[in-house]
Image (cartoon, rainbow, N blue to C red; front, side):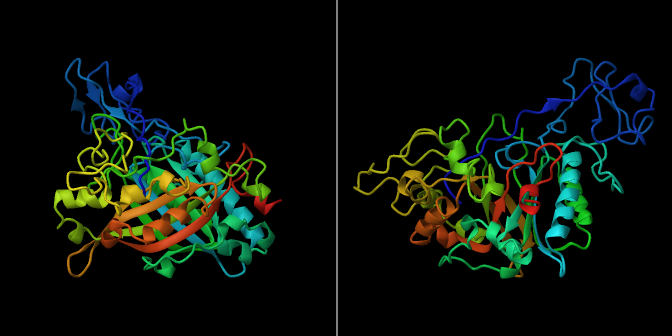
Length: 432
């Protein structure tokens, strides 16, 4: 976890008024696609139930504000960069890593990425998949769905593409705080799915799994969530399961060096990674029973920020610059020397910065009742050796938060640039 932020999603988009045919009971039912959002009857004061006319009309008082929905929010599949990197945080996420099946290689991977890219393009547009759609997301719009694909270090050995493996994809160093489960780490291929509707996200996960056929097998899969866009009165930096505002100092698109920090340059090496990025994925368990025993001042000293509004200790607002030299009446630093926010500051790490885009997770309870919950830490950078690694090394040497978290899984993946119209993701690598 680092002291950087991501803006929340855009405001809800009003749904269109119900059509005359819907009012007659002919629109809801077999002919409704995901692109055709369930509407409100603004002029008539009626809202149709999903089962159609005659089943569950809901009266809306005259002049009442019509229902709104995030379902119409749409991210674009084709572009300079893959979706799911700079997009706003989504309410629901799935991460899944695959290993190539025995005998599968470059040819089978190319066919798979063609299928996956075609499916991702349709789903992100709010359309059903081309065949055997499960109807899980029927009636929903795109819901800001994004699907992102990456390659792990081992992929290049299994496809005889070692010469195309980027140096930045070298395995991450060991950290003393790691307690990694190898079965839930790394992988040949990686997929990130995010959406503002849980059914839309699951539908995408299921569709990609079915598309995989016999080319790959699932290595590990994790589910995450964030606060729903629009749940707060104003856009706010997300909170994590410790209750802390998490991610205040994320790089922002307006920063002059934003692209330089996040993306491989167009003339970068290797050429197939032009406009791509590198993602570090860590499953970080929060030891919430221990954390919640701390008093509020103790929690704030661990983080270095106020819990209520994210302001640095001794500061006025979340965006107030942290004064690392400020001392209290007793002569000690207001922001403790081992506070998480102090250690992770870019100016304390040679300018190292990364774009964090995490999900929280909860996977039930242990036998002793302790929650298996925490953060699916996801960070993006042009080079992890200049982004994640130096920051994590410093955290490893004395972060006050390390007592209350445990790194249980890890992965590093090369995420190529976006696919142009008519291309599939990774085509320049697999057909180059």
